[in-house]
Length: 557
Image (tube, rainbow, N blue to C red; front, side, top):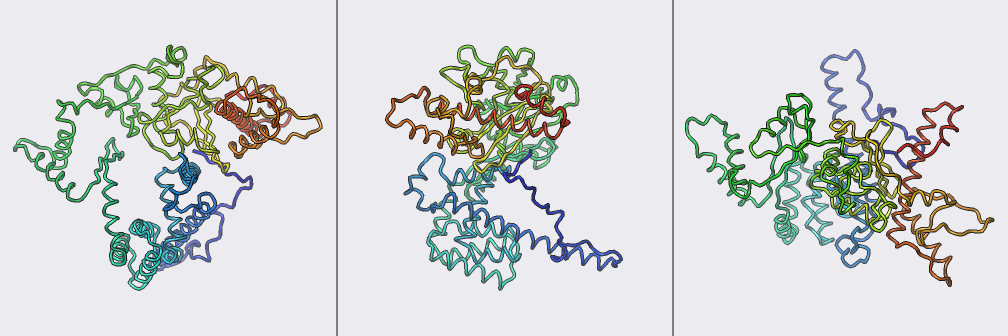
């Protein structure tokens, strides 16, 4: 993944900074082994203190963003009209941070919560983070343990007590810091402790995540007593065996859990689908890995083990017929089963930077929006224009102001997705499973560019999203270039000028607002592609041929 910062000036790199005054200079030569070890330990301590300070700076930057972009207190947000919308300011800020840093929405929300706590709820404890007394993980634990406190006056008391006791006691480990904060909250605000207990019950759930060697973890979160009952049931089921059973205790418990959840493969619970995509040669004994949806890459042997499991259905993917069978005949908006499988297998997960939702749990999105009234005018149902997005990021793309996504195929046939945030940061990511479908991007598409792009590219100036026509201006009026740094602001500005310029005149709108917005985004994507192509041209083409090459038609996307 590559990220492009908004500013054009390249910042000084950390590796070029002189950190010697902070005790992080190179260890001098000629030291005895003991002195070299001491110097290394001192550097270790200094880096930990520096990490705490940098996290403090990071959270302060997040707090500054929060105060400018979403100043409403979440506790009173229900009374604000702005916070009743589908994509409220805080949600859009979290999405911008997640996209820019290429982290999950959960981690971005955690950053915002901790930045808010540092600024408003735990400023005294935050000083300990700044000075390296608390580690970032320990500060996160304090934030978590004090979440249920809603009384500002009590929060001030709790913050001061936590900071004082940590300073006096020398407690540093995450577990003991969390326990100290929990004790103080229970002592100062009994109601908060009770509310935390009730709120925790709502966090019950089941999650799974992959680990190495084709294995995964199933994690159940519930009240302590319910988990104890489940654990006892698993233990009892795993002990129903005899002396001939050579399985380990862990293997027996895992098998017993599987049988309890799936009905031992005989009940209705066994009707479960997992999706694996692999090269045909792997099933014939080759060594090329496969992709298991929700897990990631698995070995060739693992693929064959799954394929040989009773009940497994193997369906070949014939890419030679893909170009002629991209959309369903009865509904061109919907992809064929072949294209659906190929697109999900190519990307593997949600394509929004930082999101890891498995592709088969996502919705397929037309990057350039599909035009239901005139399909030729909008984006095509094709592998070049489809990618998986989870429900949340699909809604962000559709409804939140300022976010613009794109998808391009480079000259080598590799498919890239791109997301631009309202602040102008750009994240580009290559399709994760290009190695599995290396020839997909080289297959020629059978459709042309959207008619909306063809019909607007020949007009001078920018298309007016208010009525779908170019704004009429006198020849003496200078035309300002269209800014693409904040697409939605530009769109709204054009819409406002169009409304002001047509006061007293008959309405001339030929498109709905949604259609105009989609057409405008189409132009922005084309401009971004042209700008990207010109940057590449500047880097790779000799000056003598640069102009002719740049003028030789549109970029080959």
